[in-house]
Image 1: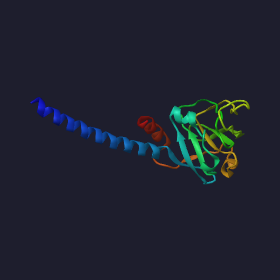
Image 2: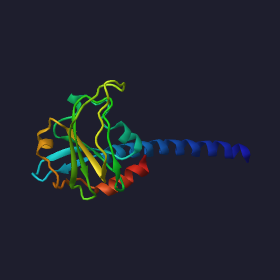
Image 3: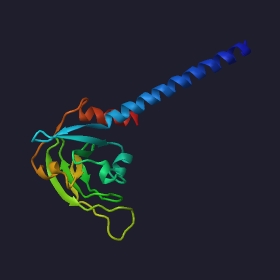
Image 4: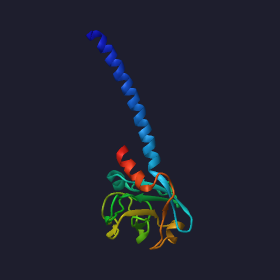
Length: 176
């Protein structure tokens, strides 16, 4: 009886292992798709948007991204589940950024323009830091972006992708 159970058990474990590998691959694909979406500006322009939801993604931000790898119509949205104190710094960045502090409706409540890039992690010179702002989310765009230059306090952005921004935030946290 024991001899019969061992091969059967081994076969079941092999099947379970194969299935779990496929489900991990699917979860990674789902996670990658969830981390990208589109925001629309009040003028109708579209921003390809990368979401930073996890602490790791938010810590990484745009650090290490070369200017050629981040277009003028791209943005990074730091998604938070609630309003809080936000301050950003710019280590290992290769282009200046405009930071847009947003409320829960994606309305711009404050702007930090032309925050200086700082290739590398060493100081001096000092690594640029934004002022402290109470905000729900933060959006980063290249300071040289023509779209960034048009945005102003009071403008409301619209999340254009499905699922909604809050659904994505929840799913990303679950899949991570």
